[in-house]
Structures are given as structure tokens and as C-alpha cells.
Length: 410
Ligand code: ASP
Image (cartoon, rainbow, N blue to C red; front, top):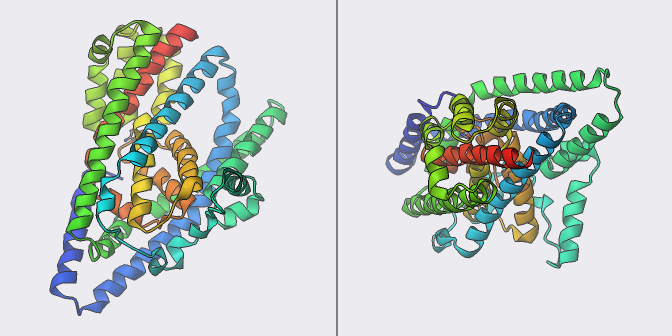
């Protein structure tokens, strides 16, 4: 999606929806038409989400065989990426555990069932049980280790992720090197990308309808709560980008935080301005070689992998945003829900493409995993542009710290 018309469209729909709700409360047909468009858009999305996650993940894991051939460099880089992404989501979740100023405002929707079965069918998948560690583990395991057909049919995202990863790993281990299956799965993934592409051509209509409908409910307190979300995400992201990542860089390379931030400032500013890790990649490569002293062969592996799979800022944002949206849409997460957010936010940040708003598709997985209505995305879209800028800068910074880690250990 071209990001230039993204913000104007959302704001036009929000203002149009708000104006009609206040000035023309009796005109029902506008409401009915946008309701219909919103339903059609969500149904089409739901048609593609489960097969898309399933096939693309299996194809991706099968391809891991290629990177495992890279031996030590592959192992060190992947371990570093997973660890720092995990730390980032954890920071986000710990921050919202203690600081969630938006709970001073009423939720947007007290009872999510009013939004209809379409958007809440997975809400019942989270059963907090009696709240003990044992029932928590048992619920999580039941959701993760599930018959693949049930997982797909119920859109149990956690189940689909686990089944696809295990299936892909088993295939990668057992198949002979000349097997045709990885190619077949790759082609199936390409078909689901195509289908998703068709659905996404209706994105402007879908977004307009969702925002129009949401705007009828949004009032000043929702906007204030959104402002607080921006503040909390901003603070937690700065903490990760100015303290955690520079500390790792210091530890592995001896460069103090100031030296490190100065060395990587060019790609970070570019990421901030383009909101795209992929677009920043050429500059990150040059910086890694000229300023961080990583050779060309290693930077050619570490950075492209990082630009697609290592997104600390994105993972942190998804964790905080999911907890915020759960509150706004009246979903009680419980400990099981928070753990599900941790796991799915990590995985979906790995799968997000390094383009502006690339994580919005993965964000839907996080919402589905804990039963938050998909239309909650509409609320995030109102603040998406400014947030994307600095989370992308932190994504790129994380990749560059990865270069120092690779230089030291691989
Ligand atoms: N814009 C981000 C990136 O390119 C992805 C996202 O979080 O939407 O890294």
C-alpha cells in the first residue's frame, strides 16, 4: 500500500464518520452500506489469513536449511535476533503491566460481542481456567498442540504457527536435498500471497468503512487514550534503542553508546524518514562495512536477514498495542493472553516485511491470537504513521548491533 494516501484516507473517513454521526444521526443507509463493506472486507481477509500464515511459514522454515549451511554465522545471528526481539516484547509487556494510563478512560466497547460473531469468534479460544500456573500451561498447550485442521478452521493462530513450524522442521530434516516439496510449498505460499494481494486491493474501501464505523463510537476520551498509547510506545522504544541495544553494542565491541550511535546515525535517520528497513538496507550495508568494520561476506548475510526478520521496534510496539486494544475492546487477557501476545508478537515481527506499515498484517495475527476484534486495527491506523517512523529506526539499529555480534562471535 502506498503510504502517501494512507493517512489522508483514514482521517477523511474518521471525520466523515464523526460528522454523519453527529449531524445526520437519522441517515441509516450510510451506516448500513459501510457496515456491509466492512463485513465483506473482514470476510475476505479471514479467507486468506490462515492459509497465508500456514503455507508461508512452512515454506520459510524449509528454506532455513539453506541458512543452517552457513553454520556458525547463521546460528549466532539467528540466536541474537531471537533474543533481542524477545527482550523487546518483554520490555513492552513489563512497561504496560505497571503503566497503563489509558485505563483511566472508559473502554471503547464494554462487551465485544456487540460487534458480532464475525470479529470475535476466536475470543472464546482463551480460557483463563482457575488462573493457576497449571491451568495456564494446560490452556496454552491445548491451543498450541492441536489438530492442524482444527487450528486452520478455528483460525487459532498460535496453533497454526506451531503446527507449521513443526511440520517445516520435520520436512527440513527428513527430506532428501533434491526433494521437490520445498519448491511446492514455496509455490503454494506464492499462491496465497497472490490471493492476499487481491484482497489488499480492496484495502482502501475496507479501511474507509472500518474507520467510518469506528468514528461513530470515538469520542474525546478515546483520542486521549490513543495519545497515551503513543507516549508509552515512544518511551519504551527509546529505552530499548538508547539503553538496551547500545549496551549490547558496548559489551560486544567496546564502542561506548555515543560512539556507536554516531556510527549508525545515518541509516537510523534514513529508516526514520522512509519507515522502511528494506529501503535502508543499502545504507546499512555500507555503514556496517565502513563504520563497524564488518566484512562484506558477513554483512551480506546478517543485514538482509535482519531487514526482513529482526524487528525489535515492531515486536515491542505490537506487544503494547495488543494490550491497549484488549482493554479498549473489553477483552480480559489474563496471564494466558499475555503469554500468547508475547509469542505471537515475536513471530509476527519475524514475518513482517520491512516496508512502511509492514507489520499491520502481522498485527492481525496478534489480535486474532487473543480474540481482539480485527476492527481494532482501525484505531491503530489513526496513529500508525508517526509510530512507524521511530520503530523502523530501532529495527535498523538492532540489525546493526547484530553486525557487531556477528563480528565478535562468528
Ligand atoms: N516499517 C517497519 C520496517 O520497515 C515495519 C513495521 O513495523 O511496520 O521495519
